[in-house]
Image (cartoon, rainbow, N blue to C red; front, side, top):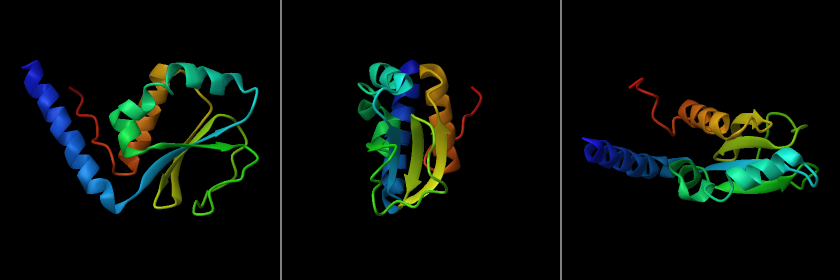
Length: 126
């Protein structure tokens, strides 16, 4: 039964990755030197992020708080906290996480942003 669930999840991930080609997603991490929460994220999440389904759907791009920001990105407002994680779809901000609430909360918040962007399946409650 577990292998069936694993296969279904893998198929869904591939299907989602294929349907997302119309919208380029990326996760921009706004950071600054000396930010202890940025360092904590780097220790807990950075090594695994590119290997996760979330990391494949929304690759990470790092930007310093004072910029420069990518010229093709339109933010709803300038970030004021570090780290701030901004989900960008086709160059426009579609959501953000301000601060780093810890590993468990980060994944849940990121999944919620991806769901709201239509790039991640809604939780089924199972």
